[in-house]
Length: 194
View 1: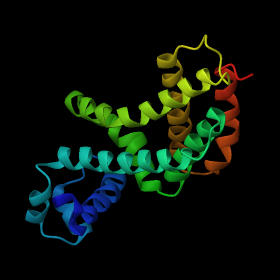
View 2 (view 1 turned 90 degrees about the vertical axis):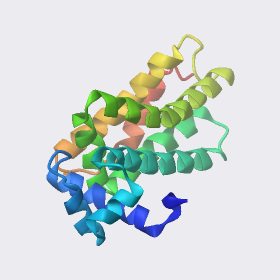
View 3 (view 1 turned 30 degrees about the horizontal axis):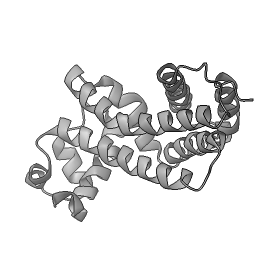
View 4 (view 1 turned 45 degrees about the vertical axis):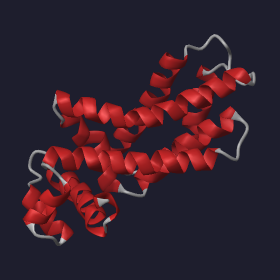
């Protein structure tokens, strides 16, 4: 399959850098090709257009991230611990890749409505993990039954997302990962942790 080929990954990684440095609208396919060290035409063997690159990039990075989270939290029985791992891992991933942080927090927001629908489809896997953690927490008595899972999930994602966006806007001047315990504490209070 195309996606297993090293060139596919090279183009995705190049796109992250080019989009972060130039902005999505100024990130020409030719710049991405140059950054990846491939001919312009090679890109079209893997992607239909620039939008397809952006969607694929998000699908690839978010898909890998969700898989990592699922395997990391599998060894824990406490929903509170799982939630901490989710927060810390999300902060860790983006604090280790400033280009990707800029793309996910700023450039993806510039996308048109059709593109945003595609991107929210990709995000579903992540939100499903949050839902599972919340449900487990309710089932095992760690979280109050009074929480609305859908609303709580939005609040959790929104808090994580806004914390990262603020860090990006502040040009990574502080340690994002160091905020994980504080964010986790805030979220647990919102879940009615006993």
